[in-house]
Length: 336
View (cartoon, rainbow, N blue to C red):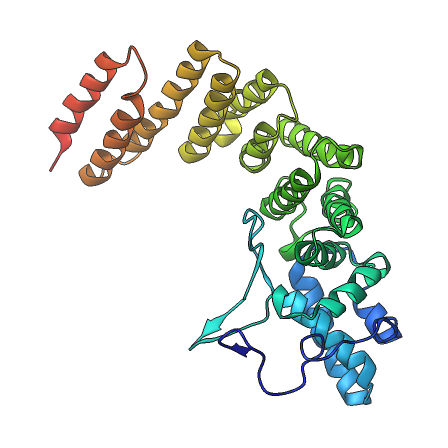
């Protein structure tokens, strides 16, 4: 922990002194950061923590210093959609906080940038490369390596060769969406149309298709907005996929999921200037609030809540006056 943004009054590897590249190439460090079948942060944090304990017991000072630096990086809280501060302190207590990237010395960042290609663990390689690029935007090589490594993480899961933390094997899950979100932010900062980012666009398309083919509505809720925001698919294709999944029997009474998919379809149609279909989809999204109300005949309060939401959602849509009036009449009837 640091106090008021400054390091504690002790020697901290990477913060008060630079750990040389040779220390990171020691076997204990290489083993801790080797590739595994898990491409997520909790896995690497645990492995580095164990390696630090072993190095301390063995009296391997150089390995311990290198692992201390990498251990700091493994603790950063990941905020992938934050352009300014994607790595935050994991904890802030009584004016003290856990490490953040800017704690590291600039010369240490130079060493880490050279180390990046040698890190076997895909998720950790992405993180270290990302930190190097974040602190030195002129380091294009680290930016490219970060994007490529984030893509590799998702590709490995898509191909069944790895999993995320907690045994998560869905390539359209939250961790995948986070990695792709961060990779896209880096790519857009560096130049979205660069050929080096073709694999990034392709993995977004592949994961989107996987979610559609697997009838995975919640998966498409994760990957679909990323696809839409970056126009990876044609707008009509994204809208059609979202609508197919919104009407899938697999979702059953999962009205929030169906609502998200109808709203996604509506946004895609609106961007494509297909106003009629956009309104149609948004009406269907609003009707899921009514379905939520129907599912709770035991609670007038819950029904009123959802009926209010339905009326509010319908209000901006032309031609819905009669439906809103009917819902208002129902609301007045059940309102306690």
